[in-house]
Length: 426
Ligand SMILES: *Cc1c(COP(=O)(O)O)cnc(C)c1O
Ligand code: SF4
Image (tube, rainbow, N blue to C red; front, side, top):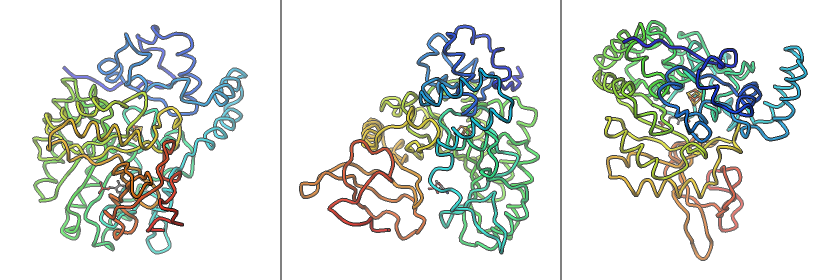
């Protein structure tokens, strides 16, 4: 049986048969919030993942569909009014972009990581950690469906200037040749697996040449297994994709998926399980990651089930992230100590094979900061932290301390413990 991809966005979502079960308020929220945050879903998510009988609380519905609470009340009413007034497109976009700018569209200063090649800024590359270069291929800057929490939302909303994308493979290759310490290249987006096999090959195959011997691991950051597993089953070039994977493995390099799974339901269908098996059969590794999100996956049991299921399916649990302060953050965010409690509770429920996972961690300007725990030292309650990755590699793995703050939801709200003026790396 061949299943073809069908996308739904604001233009055609009313064609989803189950939409008629939603209340008028819920439908209105899609129209209003969907004009600020990106909205796109598809027939697999709609037909195989969402439990429409419980859509109001269904995590996958919340993951894909805009809800009223994802905008602050005032923003919601402003957009609703602007939309009802039937402004011209330009007038409406002015209102929408003003609100978007208030949603912190570029968190944790990602523009700091854009490197130079001579006098040229390489906008499709981010190079923050010595060993790993992120590459944003221009054709991969969309996804099979969009997550309502995503921090990359500005680039899907056509906000110019924020789009990290680059067509020129040449520049990437030149840059890699000049940086022999880079061992990993991570293709990211968007979702690189929205590209055709031919386009993906054009990016990947040059890296198999001898002059790129220092590149040991090619990684692909993708949500395709969760949102469109038919990419590896029935898409016209599904076979070609698998043959490309074979070729990379045969060259002696490691090929690894950084696969995004936010909820165990995404691992439950026959399609995703078959897709994982086909990919694993080529020798590609699959590591998994997800942010911790209120209304989606904020229960320890759910993470324990998810990690176990991933290991059953031959995947390696890798990262639990803390949601970034952008977009609908007030709706998805959780205090840091709650994040640690959920992590610890879940981690203590699984065996060692699942404990390859690390977290909860924040990708902030100085690096990936993990919360190791909350404890008391000489009568002061503190967060114990460490860098999993640091802008400066020497910072990595050194424990450091911040004053305990039960409200804090991001690193910038933390102060050094014991009355110190700064953290050790500042
Ligand atoms: C997470 C991340 C990486 C990859 O880090 P690993 O720990 O090697 O998986 C690379 N670059 C940036 C900017 C990142 O946030
Ligand atoms: S699939 Fe990834 S990049 Fe795309 S919307 Fe979801 S989180 Fe963002």
